[in-house]
Structures are given as C-alpha cells and as structure tokens.
Amino acid sequence: MKGSRMLLLLVCLSVIALGVIATGPPTCPADHGGECSDSGEWKGEFFPGIPKIKYEGPSSKNPLAFKWYNAEEEILGKKMKDWMRFSIAFWHTFRGTGGDPFGAPTKYWPWEDGTNSVAMAKRRMRANFEFLEKIGVDRWCFHDKDIAPDGETLEETNKNLDEVVALAKELQGTKIRPLWGTAQLFNHPRYMHGGATSSELGVYAYSAAQVKKAMEVTHFLGGENYVFWGGREGYQSLLNTDMERELNHLARFLEASVAYKKKIGFNGTLLIEPKPQEPTKHQYDWDAATTANFLRKNGLIGEFKLNIECNHATLSGHSCHHELETARINGLLGNIDANTGDPQIGWDTDQFMTDIAEATLVMLSVIRNGGLAPGGFNFDAKLRRESTDVEDIFLAHISGMDTLARGLRSAAKLIEDGSLAELVRKRYQSFDTEIGAQIEAGKGDFETLEKLAMKWGNPRFHLLSSSTGLGLDKLTKALCQEVKHEASKRTPSTATHLDD
Ligand code: XLS
Ligand code: NI
Ligand code: NI
Image (cartoon, rainbow, N blue to C red; front, side, top):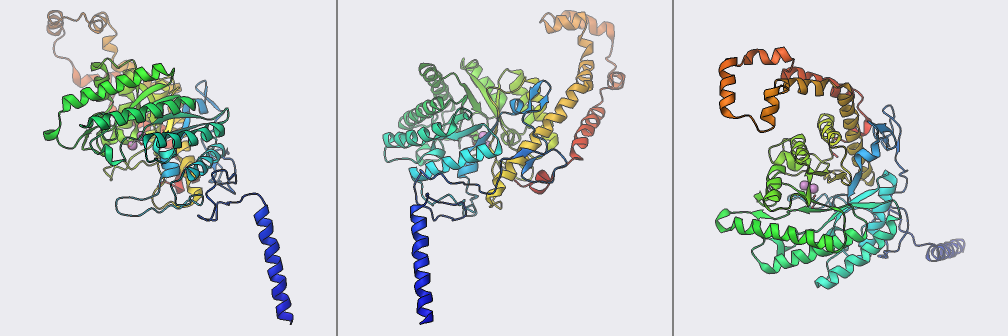
C-alpha cells in the first residue's frame, strides 16, 4: 500500500516536472552534449559560468583574466585594442575538431549535434557571438564553407550561406564586424588541382563563382578585408604543369576579383596570404617577396596587400619578423595571421603564439607600420588535440592575446628607449655624407667610386664594429634584457597553457 502510494506520488511529480520543462523556455544547456533539438533559434548560454574576460594585471592569478592585454590602455599614443585589432578565426575556434591524419576528432563541443545542417550552422554562429562578447573581441574571420553547409547545387549552397549570413548580420549588431572573409577553395575534391590554377576550366569558373559570393557576403557583413590564400594554387610536379599558364590564370583571376570588388562597391583591402607549401609541394605565393614580385609583374601591386602568417613564414625558412619587414618596406603589410609553428615539427601547426621574444619582434614591425588598420591580428590558431574543455577555448585565446600585448609593451620600450634606432643609424653613418647621398640618389658611378676606393685605401673593416658600437652581440644583449624583463613576469594563463 505504502509502496504503491509512493510510486503514484513519484509518477505525479515526474509528470509535473515534464510539464514544466515542456512549457518552459527552450533549453539546451551547454553541458547536455548533443541532446538538444536542432532548432537554430535556441538562445541559451553556450559558455555558462565563464564571465566576460577582464584585465586584472600581471599579479592576477585568475586564468580567466588578461594580465597584459588592457584594451583601453594607451601605448605609444594608441589604445592597445587599436594596435591589436584582434579577430577570432571561425574555422579553428568553431569548426576545429582536434582530428589529425592519425586520429579521430577529440573535441565534442556541447552545442554540436553531429549534423552539418543549416540549423546547426546557426546555433554555432550564436556560440561564436557569445564567445566574441565574452572574450571582448570585435572582429571575426571566416571561410564561406565554415559557416554554412553545401547544398546539392551552387544555388542551394548560396541560399544556405545567405540564411546563415542573415543571422550573423543580426548578431553582429553595431559593434562586431568581420576582419575578413574568404572562400575555401581547397577542401572539396573538385579543387584537387587547385582553383584559379586548376587545369580544368570548369573548376576555374566554379572558383570564380565561389569568390564572387564570398566577397558579396563579406561586403554585406561590413567586412574590412578579403583574403586570398592559395589553398591548392601550386603544383605537385613540374612535369605535368604549365607553370607559366597557371600563373597567368591566377593573375587574370585576381584581376577579375578587383573588377568585381569595384563593381559592388566593396572598399575593403584585398589580401594575399603567402605560404610556401602544404597542401601542395610548391605554393605559388611562396613568401612575401615572391608574392610582391608576382603582383608587381602583373600590375596588381596597388590593389593588394599581404596577410602574413607567422607559421607560414617559418615554413618558408624565414622568421615572422623577416616576412613582416619584407611586406612593410614594400608598402604591403596589411594583416597578420597570428600563430606560430613548432621548430621540431615541419608543418603548419597553427599554435597560439606564446613566445614573448617573437611577439616583440612582430610588434616592432607593426609599430613601424603605424598599426595594421584596416587589417588586424587574426588568430589563425587552434587548440591542441588534447585540449578538449570548453574553457580551453578561452584560455588559449587569452594566452595568445596576452603574449602579443606583452610583445607590444616590450617593443614600445625598445622604441621609446631609442638606443636600437640609434644603433642602426650609426651603423649606416658612412652613407650620411655627400657621396653617400649621391649613391642613394642613383648618382654613384663606378669611375668616381673607383677613384674614392683608391684614395681611401682598404676599408678598415676590423675597426668598424667596435668604433661604432654595433657588434651583433651588443644588439642581442640589449634585446634579451628587454625580453627577460618581461618574461620574469610570466602569467599563469601563459605558463600553464603553452600548448594552446
Ligand atoms: C592555411 C591558411 C588558411 C588561411 C585562410 O594554412 O592559413 O587558414 O588563413 O584560408
Ligand atoms: Ni592563415
Ligand atoms: Ni596557415
């Protein structure tokens, strides 16, 4: 008797509870892995328990706080947020699975339902904007294929994209904008031989249609730049490749994109992102110098700038600083894909930058460039395979933002101190003479120089370094002191999440 009454009571209570759930607001708490309905209209919290990330200064022990990035603080006459212009890369942060050629995905974000539906794309978009709001970043970057699923036909694919983009526009509000958009021309099998450099005319046309649409949606969302990364624009073997013809196609493709940009009134900067190899063994936009030469040869130099990615820089055998300086002195530094590689791994590992010395050199170039606007720093960086907690997404970005902020602080000190600039000035002082000026003005003929060489005798090279105080060792020491000073203030977020 007693037992059956208890049972009845339990049944009643469950019915009431179910009724409350059924009539209450739609719920999909972020810890109910995959149980939610596929409604894209869900408006719950994706990152419950994670507050808006604030600046707490170097002594803070709170991993969910900035130690060095203080958005409103002025450094060299500009707010930190205006130097940095950070952006989140949708493809890594919201489409990265942790999968690699040896293993299945490791990340199962609670809001994912395992489908590639439009509804799922919309829900993911909401997660993106909650993340941007909480991390305090006003920009995001995307490929067309990251944000919306393909349809059966190009028309259907474009329709899907429009639907997701309409929601993104609404969620952006007045504050958030894309730093850049781009078309993904490398994943689908049709792009196995490249897009604009494919040997198939149909693929060239399809690439054009995809870039046209991606440019339209970037413009619609108020994007400030548009990126071309030559995903498979390169070759695997020169024996089956007409390189001259492919490069010609690429140039014509870029010309057509400039024409279309102007036609639709898109004022954003067009950016080319160099990378030497991966996925092809030779990518045509090998590095900054190669790309600058290609643009110049094809009369496109005034229409494009470069998006320098640090990991790509090291893959091409350069440092990120070298690539940034090459772009800068050619008037081409437009944007930075802020990541870093691993010296012991030979591919694009897309790690968040945590090396303060590298960040200092990066920021030196940015300061010399007067900033990056309308470009910025896009975190083309992903969590490590082993980082599977939702919180890791925040920790990784905080660590990347703090590292670059520390780089900015160190670089500003080097500039304010002035000794580095003075050291460089002194190094070239022999050219600060009448004959030096003549040479630099293109009037240094060989006969005159020969006479001078005879008059001056053998250059006293062994005295040059010590007399001007420009030994490389002194320079290295000066830089190390600055960086060491910063490193001594290591933060918990950077220290404990180096792999992010
Ligand atoms: C790949 C590239 C890519 C571009 C955007 O290595 O970095 O992510 O930034 O297509
Ligand atoms: Ni990139
Ligand atoms: Ni890359």
